[in-house]
Length: 375
Image (cartoon, rainbow, N blue to C red; front, top):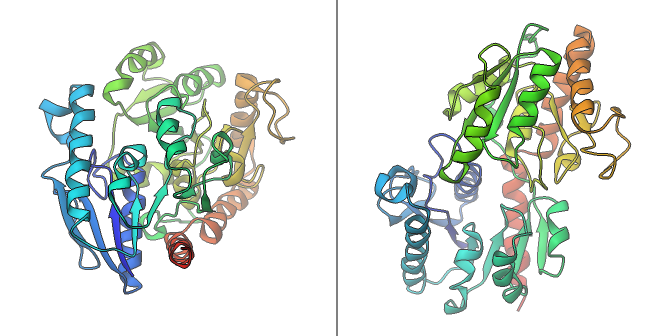
């Protein structure tokens, strides 16, 4: 097959630091190349050039590296749209079997100008009204969800399949003999935004008197939330590290007692969950969005109902909200070494069986062929 992959241009592919979608695009590009498909990756010019795919620069550099663009949300949005206009012009000069869109609703604005098959993977929630105007207009296109829960807001879309995001296990080493003990801290790895629940995590850390490291990207739109977080950062129980690269991310995951990201929204997937479990690090989070699909309660961590009015399951932790999170943290720390060791190994096995790059690429290849069979 001849495949075009359309990446967001805000970050490089793969991302230098924080970035989920860009890692997925990178793995699909390499994975399809390994399967002898011809892959053209439309991305920022400072993305990685690899022998398994052709990099076609859409913009010279990723948008977030440009101060004159990254500091103004309106200029940033206009730059993204102009980049897609240029992308469409380039695509019209080629003939692909499949154009795989990872740039969401913005790309679909222009998809009617292409007489080619477009598959859109949704990396974000399907609950934003302004985006859904575009999705509904293109509901008969081919869509891929990254969790079953993600579909609930727009079930009328023509979903080809649910394909879980995959990670490269080689990038997340697992040492079953390395056991973070009760002195090890928890880690929060995600964007510093209201949706991810950094403040809730910090509150719990203070309540149970356990250390929490927040290593998080602070985007322009989340600056006000960062200011709200500052009072909780005392460098005793809560420490703030900021955005980190992959190597440091991997090291921190291996040394943390658990990943603690009490999500406050319907998380479409959450790569941080699978990255943590691949490292043998149990996860504590609220049972929202994709979390119950990814985390095995009591086996790879603990799920907690976010409130009495929003119960998503009969989990081991019966308390809800902040009280439930506190109990889950205490359970992780009180766990005997042999039980904790079993949980760590179960985390790695769970990811190996369900959330690898190889499995993801196989599923996308099947989806492409399924689309090609349709008129």
